Length: 306
Image (cartoon, rainbow, N blue to C red; front, side, top):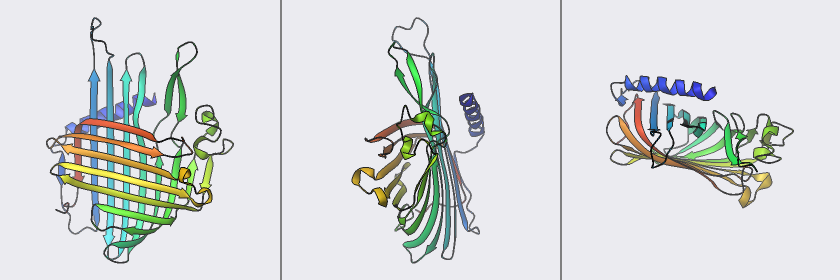
């Protein structure tokens, strides 16, 4: 049912996107202290075969979409940056039903006070989770495929409060250094995952729903730049280290990367992925990759620096 609701929302977004006269709109507002930017992308894929198709295949339809909104305020030495970064995708294969392909919910707010041109003191709060249930699929002893739940909205979810200094030598690159970055990990109804994830799913005791890590360090680096004409590279790297359990294997790393090429003012091609290492989730690195071809729309109230 939830997947059908998501499909309805995606179709509505398609109709909205199709009604837009331009794929990118820039309306500078030089009197405002706010820089706002809204980006929306939608990709669709479909395949169908006649019943006598000898090449093999399966009827399918899939969507994935992304929404990114930034609202940054600057006046004097005060700065307040806010970002919403959402990603969701699914495929419906004939005989298998809906299966999720992409899922990310990231919210971030940061207040900073400028020390000089390149350095700020800051405090930030960010939230990372997903929209819907995640499953792994495996066959039982009889060869029948089973669907096993391994994650859900707020299972896990990470809330991190970071305090420190930010270095921003250019408008497209910045690094936050946070020697004090307490984090809470949330796992709603953790007993659901003890079979598939372990006795302490995502590092949370299965008899509880939260885990607090008060003494921790976080490094966050971001890059967002048009590296060639009509080609944009965007990545975000986060490292998190708990002082109380500090070992190389217990340091968390996450890299989100997206390379986007604008074919024309309506169509984009993008290649990206996520590299994740979190010892509380798995002893090895986790990798997610995606390729998109579809529609993109952007609105902003400022001109990008040349």
